[in-house]
Image 1 (cartoon, rainbow, N blue to C red):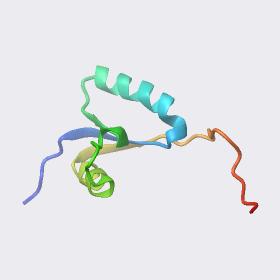
Image 2: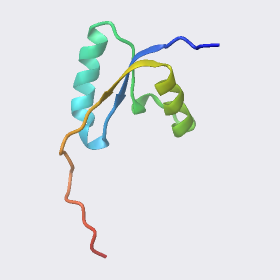
Image 3: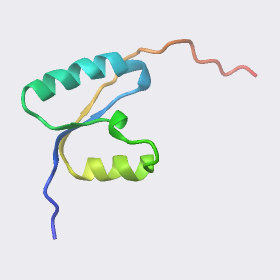
Image 4: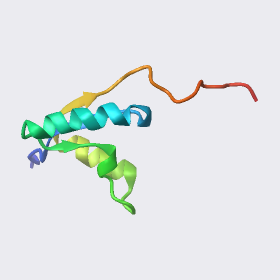
Amino acid sequence: MKTEPIYDVFLSYSAFDAGDASAIRRILESAGLAVFSPYDVAPGDRYGDRTRDALTLSTAVVVIVTGARSSPVSTAR
């Protein structure tokens, strides 16, 4: 039995790109699309299960990839 999608778009992004993701989400929602993003996971929900389920129930995926980061990555110990 196939489950019908409930989200038009699964929005995936780094926390460093949250501002851009929020703007993109507003644009998609203003176009009438149902959007899921990691911030839709409620406290107490199992993050991995919830995001996997949402991904399965989405028609499309938008991945935001930028070079943004708040500080340099350090591998020194």
